Image (tube, rainbow, N blue to C red; front, side, top):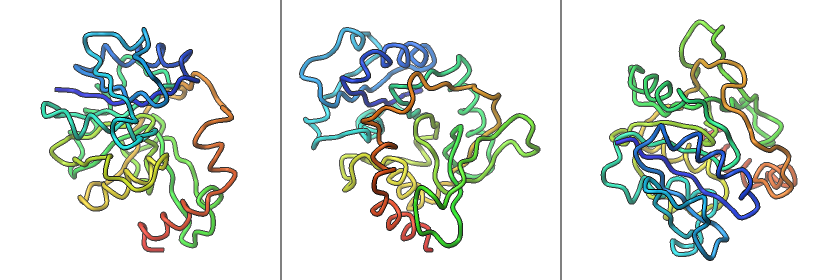
Length: 227
C-alpha cells in the first residue's frame, strides 16, 4: 500500500486543498496532521484521508507528515509531502520506481543539499542540488534530502516522529533516522519545474526562521555528518 503523510497549518488553507488534490490520486491513503486546527477543515474530509491533530501527539509540527509511518501498519511505500507544493501526476510512480531500482536502500527526493567539509553555517555552507534529465546517472547522493517530496520503502526505513526532540527540523530528523538505519539519501532525474511551490517566501515558514538563526541546525549537521 502506498501511504502519504502531510502536515498543514491554518495559514495554508488556501494552498493545502491544491496540494492534497494533486497527491491524493497517486496514493492509497493520506495521513494529514493538523497543526493549529481545532476542527477538521472541509478540504480534509475524504475517504482516503485520515486526520490527526498534532496537539494530541505531543504537539507535532511539520514533523507530523511522518506520523502515518508510525501508525499505519499497511504502509509499504511511504511518501512525504508539503501543504504548499503541487505534485505532478507521475510524482509518486517515478520516485517509487527510482527507489526500487536503486541497488541499495535509499530514500528518493527531488532536491537536497550537499555540505562543505568545513561547516560553519547550515544555510551558507551548502549547495542545493536539483537533479535534471540531462545528468548521466539517474541518482545523485546528497547529505540532506528535502522532505517536501520524498519516497522510501517502509521495510528499509521506519521510525516514530513522536520521539523526535527537535520540532520543525524535519529534514535533519529524517537524515538522522536514515543514518541510523543505513539508508542513503538521493535525488533523482526530473524535468525542470516538475514539482511547483504554490506559494513562496511565507513569513511564517521554517526556512524564514532558519535564515534568522541556524545555530542549532549547524551544530546538528556537524554532529550527524561527523564534521
